[in-house]
Amino acid sequence: MSDTILEMKNITKAFTGVKALDDVSLKVSRDEIHALVGENGAGKSTLMKVLSGVYPHGDYAGSINYEGSECRFHSISDSEKIGIVIIHQELALIPFLSIAENIFLGNERAIGGVIDWHKTTSAAGELLAKVGLNNENPNTLIANIGVGKQQLVEIAKALSKKVRLLILDEPTAALNDEESSKLLGLLLELKKQGVTSILISHKLEEIARVSDTITVIRDGKVIETLDNERHQIDQDRIIKSMVGREIVDRFPKRESRIGEEVFRVEGWSVYDPVIEDRLVINNVSLNLHRGEVVGLAGLMGAGRTELAMSLFGRSYGKRHSGRIFKDGKELQLHSVSDSINNGIAYLTEDRKNYGLVLIDDIKSNASLASLKKVSRGQVINRGLEYQATTDMQQQMRIRCTGIDQIVESLSGGNQQKVVLSKWIMAEPDILILDEPTRGIDVGAKYEIYTIINRLAYEGKSIIMISSEMPELLGMCDRIYVVTEGEISGELDREHATQESIMSCIMNHKRGAI
Image (cartoon, rainbow, N blue to C red):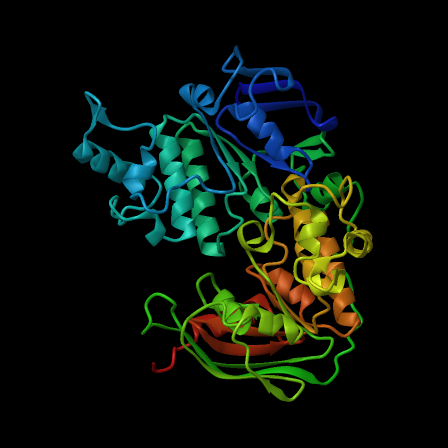
């Protein structure tokens, strides 16, 4: 391996007396892809925020040595000046500015204080070509391109700052397989061009594929560093280091107790909320039985989330047609309240923007969908709320200092448990779970899977959307394949494989609209 480009020594960082990083040391070699893995809350992102100057010198103990010199960063701009650039999980792009404007935001191509738009557009085009977006117009608004392309624009933005050490925090969390593969391929290409990368990811198969070295962090401490050249990178070993124990089976076994049909959708069609003549969901029919976990598989953009949201109180689209039945009775669900009152819950894929009030505490978030249960008249009974949410916190094993802890300060896995708690407290019969394990680590995933299995065993019926095919195959009794807003296949557990799902997608021909 080549010489060292970065050495972080004895980094310790605490928040309100709790150590997020405890004497962490990290060494990164030049021209390598170095992965950081660990459970949510292990300290990975905190360590990278120390490195990039988000947490300035003086807010932590320890030292940073980059390119042979000690660094004391007081802001992100300090680290960027010497070629260290971080891309956070929540992309820092402005939707209604163009690609070119975003690439050079804060780093404008100007002459005498006046932006040279020709130079800006031309330079943006060259950078887009480097990241594989040759055919993208630099004047296109960020709002008009997908998440996968936005991630590549962030890398183009980093290249505009003469990046030499690129830090990526969960870059593929919201991407489909094709987009993820393209991004990882780009990292390998940048490595050839002399760009060193530090990659944080929960997707272990991707980590094993592109990383030269992996450092495992648990509870704010480095557990071990593994070298790919020495064939030390093994998923089972990584998982054991991450969670402190072996997980023999990624998906907990469940005793199926499937009963009668409880939910049915017939001929459901939905039009786009903005382009009102664009059909997004076309003539979808599906059913769900008591105690059953049914998956919705499909590529990103296939319409799974739009279908789920439109069924949940018509919270997507303006024009709807078709029929919804629960326990044999046709429902008229015109609002989210109608759905909740009829025992239907929807866990959004975007927990931070739509699932949680991040600046509020655990108890307020957990009771949000069931205020009637913890109220007397029109007034919340704080004693009832406290008891109910404490019971739920213990039942869901939410790791926290107490139910008064602000949700924003929780790890991703524990935030997801709070969202689940909110809906379980509402006592629904049917739960629609949209990407319930997105962006959380393997240990937290296992706990979420266990909760899903328990709910199914208790007689709840679950529709589960996931972009990870192994997750659907490991958890579901049946799988519907969604392609271009239509059902392109239905597979039972015995016949569902990654190959059969992809066959349904590739062989589908959309019906006449």
